[in-house]
Length: 172
Image (tube, rainbow, N blue to C red; front, side, top):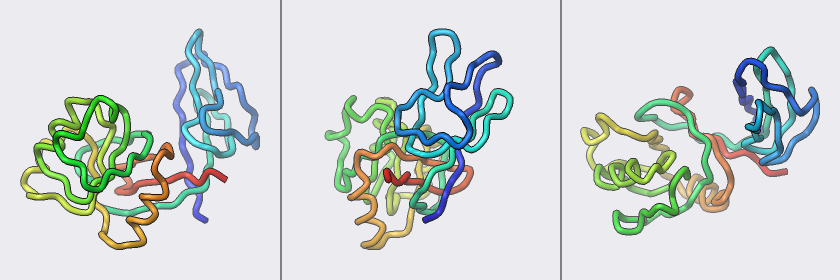
């Protein structure tokens, strides 16, 4: 299984709470700065503690696609292949949604409700992707990909547009 590396950049003066080669679970506290804690976004192993950085290595499934928008985001994957405009709600805030087919109206509502990102098989009109306000990754449509996404619902995942990929950390 492939591995990925997540680099957590910390504010100057933050204190690491884990040691190199220490295994961590989702939500474990990695560092502290004053009253603020920085938690592990997924299970993995601390592989480096550089100045103001913690490097976390984790096993992952990787879906490659074509990204629209910018940035990276972590969020719980919600498998809603046939979701429409009325079904998107505040419950989806900070989550990454999988939908088979996205459109401009769905993206606008998702952005207003602070959805973290969208993974989809296709987009209604390519020209509607200009000025996209949230990260979108279009992946190849096949039954294996859909099965992987369906079985990964509820897992905290990384949507990485600079790398044109979606990483699903393995929980074991």
